[in-house]
Length: 284
Ligand code: HEM
Image 1 (tube, protein in one colour):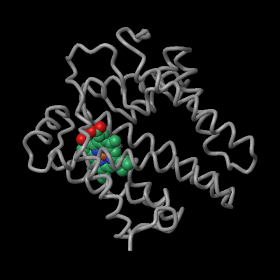
Image 2 (cartoon, protein in one colour; image 1 turned 90 degrees about the horizontal axis):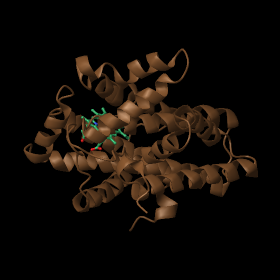
Image 3 (cartoon, rainbow, N blue to C red; image 1 turned 90 degrees about the vertical axis):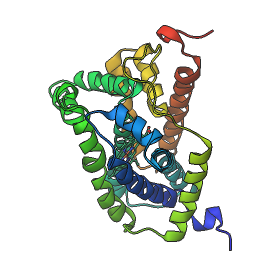
Image 4 (cartoon, rainbow, N blue to C red; image 1 turned 135 degrees about the vertical axis):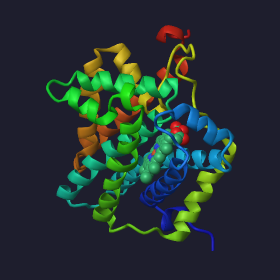
């Protein structure tokens, strides 16, 4: 019998199973990935290694599914007004969202492409504007690229930020093992997308690119950083958004603010993604 979307598989299910697919495909590509010569190794994975390009695409799309379905999962909760212990909500959601963003973001950096390294530079400069802890935080996250390439980012991506999810999933819904029917269902969708869309690997670092744009979920921050003070757009605003995202949506006003922030970020993303040209000037 065909699986009925609403009754049988929730956005939370999709998020959990996408995550598992991302981990498995990540381990597969990691065998041929070289953080000391990232871009070159991805060219080899994509162009030479049998099934390399396929697993790259599976990794990419399962990660996007994971991130998007996580948001839709929260929306699902808010829409149905599902009761949830406020104390658990705070810890689980507060940790889940930033961690998901960071794991997907560090993955993008691992391409070692012009866009990836640029996104890392922007994030690193933004972190450094945080007094006292900013520089150390940036070093712990990105390491010293001149000495160790993307080794630190790779370790953080595959271990530091990925492992806690297993604890979080268990804590949140007592889930560690997949439901194979749901896994197959999500895998089917991820595969279909992988067959149709090529996410590419970006441009080499020395390629003359103007403007340089980061991953889609980072474009809004790039736009904000351009429009207002970098620390305000790149540090304060994301922090406020995270707090709002983490609040238990008991009061209606929290839901409204949640949607306003999301809509605003979407508009910024569209401006940065489609309307910005050379020198970050508007195309029209
Ligand atoms: C043990 C776990 C993991 C390993 C070993 C791993 C490994 C890798 C490697 C080697 C890359 C660079 C290759 C590429 O860009 O195609 C990468 C990229 C990436 N990873 Fe992972 N990863 C793991 C878990 C995850 C998880 C849990 C997520 C998110 C849910 C994720 C999201 C991404 C993303 C978004 C990229 C960028 C892909 C692209 O833009 O092409 N990874 N990962």
